[in-house]
Length: 226
Image (cartoon, rainbow, N blue to C red; front, side):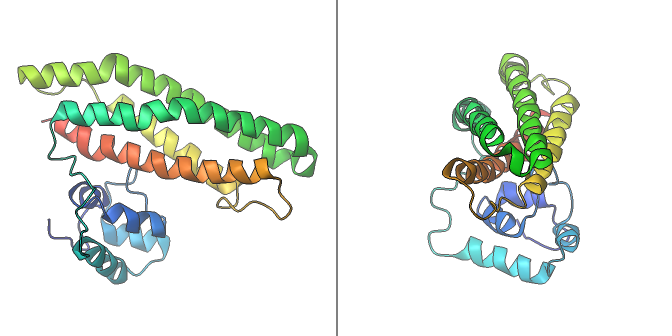
Protein backbone atom coordinates (compact mmCIF):
# COMPACT_ATOMS: atom_id res chain seq x y z
CA UNK A 1 0.00 0.00 0.00
CA UNK A 2 1.31 3.42 -0.98
CA UNK A 3 0.76 5.68 2.04
CA UNK A 4 -0.35 9.21 1.16
CA UNK A 5 -1.95 12.07 3.12
CA UNK A 6 -5.33 10.86 1.84
CA UNK A 7 -4.83 7.28 3.06
CA UNK A 8 -7.23 6.36 5.83
CA UNK A 9 -5.71 5.66 9.21
CA UNK A 10 -7.42 2.28 9.56
CA UNK A 11 -6.26 1.13 6.13
CA UNK A 12 -2.68 2.11 6.94
CA UNK A 13 -2.86 0.16 10.19
CA UNK A 14 -4.33 -2.88 8.42
CA UNK A 15 -1.72 -2.96 5.64
CA UNK A 16 1.24 -1.87 7.78
CA UNK A 17 0.78 -3.14 11.38
CA UNK A 18 3.97 -1.41 12.52
CA UNK A 19 2.38 1.95 11.70
CA UNK A 20 0.23 1.51 14.79
CA UNK A 21 3.32 2.16 16.89
CA UNK A 22 3.63 5.58 15.28
CA UNK A 23 -0.06 6.25 15.78
CA UNK A 24 0.19 5.28 19.45
CA UNK A 25 3.19 7.57 19.99
CA UNK A 26 1.26 10.53 18.63
CA UNK A 27 -2.16 9.73 20.09
CA UNK A 28 -3.74 9.10 16.69
CA UNK A 29 -6.91 7.01 16.97
CA UNK A 30 -6.55 4.13 14.52
CA UNK A 31 -9.49 2.05 15.76
CA UNK A 32 -12.75 3.98 16.22
CA UNK A 33 -11.28 6.90 14.26
CA UNK A 34 -9.77 4.71 11.57
CA UNK A 35 -12.03 6.01 8.82
CA UNK A 36 -10.39 9.43 8.51
CA UNK A 37 -7.50 10.43 6.29
CA UNK A 38 -4.10 10.55 7.98
CA UNK A 39 -3.80 14.24 7.04
CA UNK A 40 -7.04 15.03 8.88
CA UNK A 41 -6.06 12.89 11.88
CA UNK A 42 -2.76 14.78 12.13
CA UNK A 43 -4.49 18.15 11.81
CA UNK A 44 -6.83 17.22 14.67
CA UNK A 45 -3.81 16.48 16.88
CA UNK A 46 -1.84 19.54 15.74
CA UNK A 47 0.76 17.32 14.08
CA UNK A 48 2.80 17.80 10.93
CA UNK A 49 1.33 15.22 8.55
CA UNK A 50 4.45 15.15 6.38
CA UNK A 51 6.63 14.38 9.40
CA UNK A 52 4.26 11.66 10.63
CA UNK A 53 4.14 10.06 7.18
CA UNK A 54 7.93 10.10 7.03
CA UNK A 55 8.05 8.45 10.46
CA UNK A 56 5.67 5.75 9.25
CA UNK A 57 7.80 5.14 6.16
CA UNK A 58 10.96 4.85 8.27
CA UNK A 59 9.26 2.44 10.66
CA UNK A 60 7.98 0.24 7.85
CA UNK A 61 11.33 0.23 6.05
CA UNK A 62 13.46 -0.51 9.13
CA UNK A 63 15.50 -3.74 8.98
CA UNK A 64 13.45 -6.67 10.26
CA UNK A 65 10.34 -4.48 10.37
CA UNK A 66 8.08 -7.26 9.17
CA UNK A 67 9.13 -9.79 11.77
CA UNK A 68 6.52 -10.58 14.39
CA UNK A 69 3.82 -8.31 12.94
CA UNK A 70 1.16 -10.48 11.38
CA UNK A 71 -0.80 -9.19 8.40
CA UNK A 72 -4.19 -10.17 9.75
CA UNK A 73 -5.88 -8.92 6.60
CA UNK A 74 -4.18 -11.81 4.81
CA UNK A 75 -4.72 -14.61 7.37
CA UNK A 76 -7.69 -17.03 7.31
CA UNK A 77 -10.81 -15.59 8.89
CA UNK A 78 -11.09 -18.32 11.52
CA UNK A 79 -7.49 -17.69 12.58
CA UNK A 80 -8.20 -13.97 12.96
CA UNK A 81 -11.29 -14.65 15.09
CA UNK A 82 -9.38 -17.11 17.27
CA UNK A 83 -6.59 -14.54 17.70
CA UNK A 84 -9.07 -11.86 18.82
CA UNK A 85 -10.66 -14.18 21.39
CA UNK A 86 -7.40 -15.62 22.73
CA UNK A 87 -5.24 -12.50 22.62
CA UNK A 88 -7.80 -9.88 23.67
CA UNK A 89 -11.04 -11.29 25.09
CA UNK A 90 -9.40 -13.74 27.48
CA UNK A 91 -6.93 -11.24 28.98
CA UNK A 92 -9.65 -8.57 29.24
CA UNK A 93 -11.75 -10.84 31.41
CA UNK A 94 -8.85 -11.05 33.84
CA UNK A 95 -7.67 -7.44 33.63
CA UNK A 96 -10.97 -5.59 34.01
CA UNK A 97 -11.77 -7.04 37.47
CA UNK A 98 -8.18 -6.31 38.55
CA UNK A 99 -8.51 -2.66 37.50
CA UNK A 100 -11.90 -2.41 39.19
CA UNK A 101 -10.44 -3.77 42.43
CA UNK A 102 -7.57 -1.26 42.36
CA UNK A 103 -9.92 1.61 41.55
CA UNK A 104 -12.17 0.71 44.48
CA UNK A 105 -9.16 0.59 46.79
CA UNK A 106 -7.88 3.99 45.62
CA UNK A 107 -11.34 5.51 46.15
CA UNK A 108 -11.67 3.87 49.58
CA UNK A 109 -8.23 4.94 50.83
CA UNK A 110 -7.64 8.22 48.99
CA UNK A 111 -11.12 9.32 47.95
CA UNK A 112 -11.04 12.33 50.27
CA UNK A 113 -8.10 13.80 48.31
CA UNK A 114 -10.09 14.20 45.07
CA UNK A 115 -13.57 12.73 45.64
CA UNK A 116 -15.24 14.04 42.48
CA UNK A 117 -12.53 12.91 40.07
CA UNK A 118 -11.82 9.54 41.68
CA UNK A 119 -15.53 8.77 41.99
CA UNK A 120 -16.07 9.63 38.33
CA UNK A 121 -13.11 7.46 37.35
CA UNK A 122 -14.49 4.44 39.22
CA UNK A 123 -17.87 4.98 37.53
CA UNK A 124 -16.19 5.11 34.11
CA UNK A 125 -14.24 1.92 34.78
CA UNK A 126 -17.44 0.14 35.86
CA UNK A 127 -19.29 1.39 32.77
CA UNK A 128 -16.44 0.27 30.53
CA UNK A 129 -16.32 -3.17 32.17
CA UNK A 130 -20.07 -3.63 31.80
CA UNK A 131 -19.98 -2.54 28.15
CA UNK A 132 -17.08 -4.82 27.27
CA UNK A 133 -18.43 -7.85 29.16
CA UNK A 134 -21.72 -7.71 27.25
CA UNK A 135 -19.97 -6.89 23.95
CA UNK A 136 -17.60 -9.85 24.18
CA UNK A 137 -20.44 -12.22 25.09
CA UNK A 138 -22.42 -11.07 22.05
CA UNK A 139 -19.43 -11.40 19.75
CA UNK A 140 -18.48 -14.89 20.92
CA UNK A 141 -22.05 -16.16 21.23
CA UNK A 142 -23.61 -14.57 18.15
CA UNK A 143 -21.41 -12.58 15.82
CA UNK A 144 -18.24 -14.63 15.46
CA UNK A 145 -20.05 -17.96 14.89
CA UNK A 146 -22.26 -16.26 12.30
CA UNK A 147 -19.26 -14.73 10.52
CA UNK A 148 -17.47 -18.07 10.33
CA UNK A 149 -20.56 -20.04 9.30
CA UNK A 150 -21.45 -17.65 6.51
CA UNK A 151 -17.87 -17.35 5.35
CA UNK A 152 -17.68 -21.13 5.07
CA UNK A 153 -20.92 -21.11 3.05
CA UNK A 154 -19.87 -18.06 0.97
CA UNK A 155 -23.20 -16.57 1.96
CA UNK A 156 -22.32 -12.90 2.26
CA UNK A 157 -22.39 -10.62 5.34
CA UNK A 158 -22.51 -12.52 8.60
CA UNK A 159 -24.81 -10.19 10.52
CA UNK A 160 -25.66 -6.51 10.91
CA UNK A 161 -22.39 -5.04 12.14
CA UNK A 162 -23.59 -1.55 13.04
CA UNK A 163 -24.45 -2.61 16.59
CA UNK A 164 -20.90 -3.79 17.22
CA UNK A 165 -19.29 -0.75 15.61
CA UNK A 166 -21.50 1.42 17.82
CA UNK A 167 -20.33 -0.56 20.86
CA UNK A 168 -16.74 0.22 19.88
CA UNK A 169 -17.56 3.91 19.57
CA UNK A 170 -18.98 3.94 23.09
CA UNK A 171 -15.86 2.20 24.35
CA UNK A 172 -13.76 4.85 22.61
CA UNK A 173 -15.71 7.63 24.32
CA UNK A 174 -15.26 5.96 27.72
CA UNK A 175 -11.53 5.54 27.12
CA UNK A 176 -11.28 9.23 26.29
CA UNK A 177 -13.10 10.04 29.51
CA UNK A 178 -10.70 7.85 31.51
CA UNK A 179 -7.69 9.48 29.89
CA UNK A 180 -9.09 12.89 30.79
CA UNK A 181 -9.82 11.91 34.39
CA UNK A 182 -6.29 10.54 34.85
CA UNK A 183 -4.54 13.59 33.33
CA UNK A 184 -3.20 11.43 30.48
CA UNK A 185 -2.28 8.72 33.00
CA UNK A 186 -0.01 11.00 35.03
CA UNK A 187 -0.46 10.04 38.65
CA UNK A 188 -0.28 12.90 41.18
CA UNK A 189 2.80 13.45 43.31
CA UNK A 190 2.84 11.20 46.33
CA UNK A 191 0.47 8.63 44.83
CA UNK A 192 0.70 5.23 46.48
CA UNK A 193 1.77 2.06 44.69
CA UNK A 194 -1.81 0.99 44.00
CA UNK A 195 -2.67 4.42 42.59
CA UNK A 196 0.37 4.33 40.29
CA UNK A 197 -0.39 0.74 39.26
CA UNK A 198 -3.98 1.69 38.43
CA UNK A 199 -2.89 4.57 36.19
CA UNK A 200 -0.33 2.31 34.49
CA UNK A 201 -2.89 -0.45 34.03
CA UNK A 202 -5.43 1.91 32.51
CA UNK A 203 -2.86 3.21 30.05
CA UNK A 204 -1.99 -0.34 29.00
CA UNK A 205 -5.70 -1.15 28.73
CA UNK A 206 -6.23 1.76 26.35
CA UNK A 207 -3.36 0.66 24.10
CA UNK A 208 -4.62 -2.93 24.04
CA UNK A 209 -8.20 -1.91 23.28
CA UNK A 210 -7.01 0.28 20.42
CA UNK A 211 -5.30 -2.74 18.84
CA UNK A 212 -8.30 -4.96 19.62
CA UNK A 213 -10.89 -2.62 18.11
CA UNK A 214 -8.65 -1.91 15.11
CA UNK A 215 -8.58 -5.63 14.24
CA UNK A 216 -12.36 -5.78 14.34
CA UNK A 217 -13.36 -2.43 12.81
CA UNK A 218 -10.68 -2.23 10.13
CA UNK A 219 -10.02 -5.89 9.27
CA UNK A 220 -12.58 -8.41 10.54
CA UNK A 221 -15.78 -6.45 9.90
CA UNK A 222 -14.86 -5.30 6.35
CA UNK A 223 -13.92 -8.87 5.46
CA UNK A 224 -17.16 -10.17 6.93
CA UNK A 225 -19.10 -7.70 4.78
CA UNK A 226 -17.70 -8.86 1.44
